[in-house]
Image 1 (cartoon, rainbow, N blue to C red):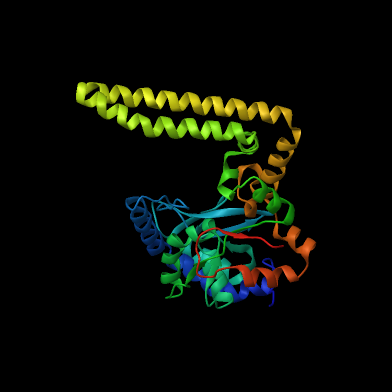
Image 2 (cartoon, rainbow, N blue to C red; image 1 turned 90 degrees about the vertical axis):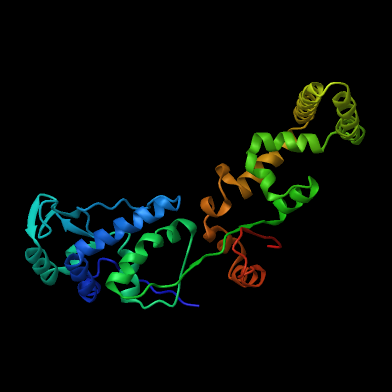
Length: 316
């Protein structure tokens, strides 16, 4: 394992990247055309563009007076550019890049290309939001590097610690049960902790209504076909009212036990905080600080590398 740290403000690094900066300007017209064509392809396929590209776009920023300014191409002439209040010809802009490359930086579509130019990459592993940019960035790769770095999705997982794990088992819950939020989850816990005889009674009524209504609907259909649809509506209303009654009973149980509300909050905070996946809200450093480097070994053993779905990792 290793970690490479680069200072993006390092002038020497920008000097190495100079050929990419130059080519991004020299090929700006072709890049814009290719990116706009790719954008239309994405929209036809039902996707949206992560970055809106126009005929006036470029892939570079310029640092002026401590602020980054987008470099834009003048619509009335491909040889004219605007950087903040500064008007430049293409030759002027290229001369500035040659003289002071540290004043220039890449936008989000050029950044991965720049990264792979500086540090040749076997594969790029990223989250869904990061990977989505590659649908457009691939065009830039092809134009500037003549290749596209393979993209792989990073693993997506929820880490379940001992306390939440015990609560999931106690209430017979799965992670998707938490997606409704803490308050509905608390009602679910209330429903699952109702006295067993009451739970059996609700289950029995649901089963009988569902099973016996089939025979009733068939008999009504023989008598008058129009009554079959009416019986279906009546059944739906009965089941809906039973569901409401079950929910009211669960809320009554919840009011009797503050423990259920605390457990619902604990589960939501730990596994689905702010109604978002844990990985979007809880930094990995929290788990690393708590469990040490052994956590990395545990993850490498527990993860299924061929699984592209969200994974559940327990046993911490």
